[in-house]
Length: 411
Image (cartoon, rainbow, N blue to C red; front, side, top):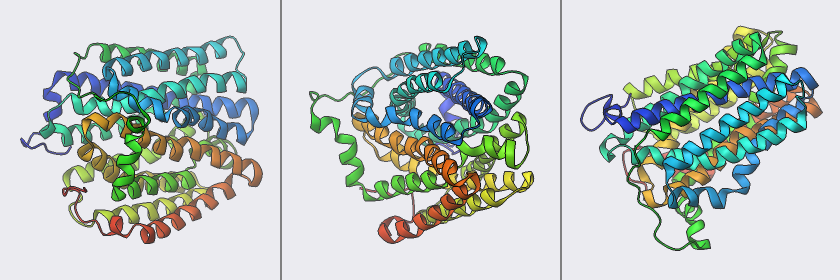
């Protein structure tokens, strides 16, 4: 992990509130991965329709987009800890609803989409709140250490969650949803146990100017804008997660456990890079490293789309995760260290929409194209598009390309 100013790799865990926050966030992310694998496989098993796989991502993303002017302001004006706890309880209820549909044999696409919309609303409010709560739980000198641990926590969940989800679904969908429900309830309890932290709240009355503060901050920071938008369009075009049930069942001929392995592979690559960056942080040519990472993400996407061999497909996905981690590292460091606390919720709300667009909306893009052209062309076209984005952004944001160190202030 990143060493804090005091030289302690575990500095963030010296604060009990952060420790509870860490485990709550891990359990929540772990549960989401289990639900994602189970819903994707069950949906394709029931319908054999690639478009429905894309709609899973769309219905989870739309609430973040439609509520963007509300969620960040709420995180800046109200108790972030309470918001996160309530959202985790709502997430548990959604997992419970999916469990009920499975037990009663009433699992139908539109009932599932209705639950996923509620799931999306919950995630829309939790995203800015949870991203903004972490910095309130540790002193500023330990924040980089906390950011590094947060990233590793999410990546660990991204590795283990899909594998466990695939194994659990191999037993039964009921078992998968039950475990996800239990973990989300436990995550909510951890958050409730966090003492109310100090928080600098927005003092001005609610107005359009205040609501749009997150947009103004990002638009004024051209390097931040370039980094976020680069990640958005690269993953939007290159994402192939939604189509993994098709590749696992029809192309690579793997079962639910194999799907879990495919879903976990990007996380394996990402955590390997995260560990490397923890000991060898990017000190020079950070912008160039980010563009190289995006280019490699496109190459990995092309490899995955064209592969008919499981080990090559898994290797390609690991390359995608490893290269994407570079972008995540740069983007999250910029946002965490250079955003004032009083607007952090609104800035993170905008960032979460970008992240959601690159993931869930990317799944919709892939599912829609796969329903028209087929799964393989949809992934290959996306990989080519990602390489094009890397070139276009390198020309359109020359300051981002030339940025050297992440240590220097960007404003």
